[in-house]
Every structure is written in structure tokens, then in C-alpha cells.
Image (cartoon, rainbow, N blue to C red; front, top):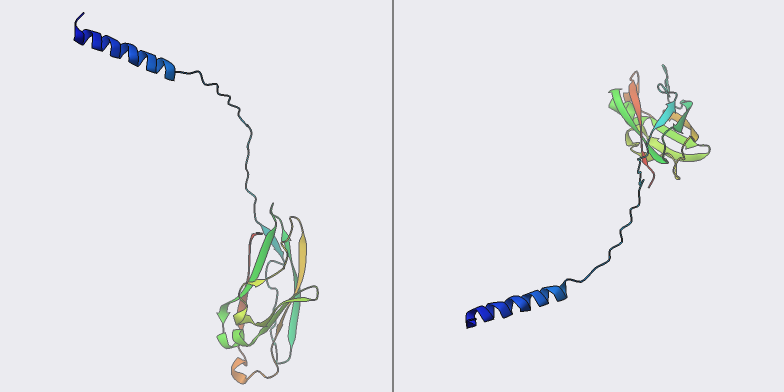
Length: 166
């Protein structure tokens, strides 16, 4: 055998020994956890009555009109809700002048001009599923109102928005 062949043979044997030393048995155990089902909840509510909470044909200074409404959580998760007033038609000066009050039992939720009622929180704690809350709502025309609201009207839309409780 020539020297070149010997060197190749020794190198091959050396590589085989090194690779054989590296090839060790490794035991692996694998287990599976099945049936991980994740469903999302639903945020939904019902208002009653669904329209015309406050109406008056001849509101005069110093007069207040009142009504009640309920909000029921019909979703599958607790929710929080806000209420806003928007002028859908009519005169801005009356919308700015009307004082809106909303109460949950005797707790005052909002009292101020209709035009400033923006996302007033309806309840402090999240409303649980299938729970219904009753509210009273009033519109008051102050006694010190000026004549710019005489013979005017404002069509209000109350917007109730909800989101999941944090």
C-alpha cells in the first residue's frame, strides 16, 4: 500500500470512529393535549322601549318631561355601556338648552345639556348576562331660557353603545 492510500484509509477509519462516538441514542417522549376549544363571547343588549323615550308637543320653560327605559344584557359576556345624545334634526339652540338627566334608581348618571351628553357611563360595574337595569330619563327646559327657543323643535337620538367588560 502506498502512503497516499494509507493516509486515506487512516482518515476514513478516524472519521468513522468520530461519527460512531457522536451517534448516541436519545430517548424522546411526546404527549398531546387534545380538545382545546376556544369560543368567543357575544356582546348584545336590548333597549325597551326602542324609540321615543322623550316627546312633547308644547314644552314650556320650567317644564320637565320624564320616562323610563331598560337595558338588558342578552349577550354571553358581561358588558359596559355608554349613552350619548345627538341632534338628528331641528334647532341647535334648543339642543344646547335642554337639560337631560339620567338616573339608575336614585344614582345620577348624567345631568347637563343634551349637546354635551357624550358617552356617559350607564353603570359603574359591568352588567352581567341576562341582567336588566332600569333607568329614568328627563328633559328639562330651564325657566331662564331666552326667546331663541320659542316655537322650535329638536329631534334627539340617544345612542347606547356597549363593549365587553375589561
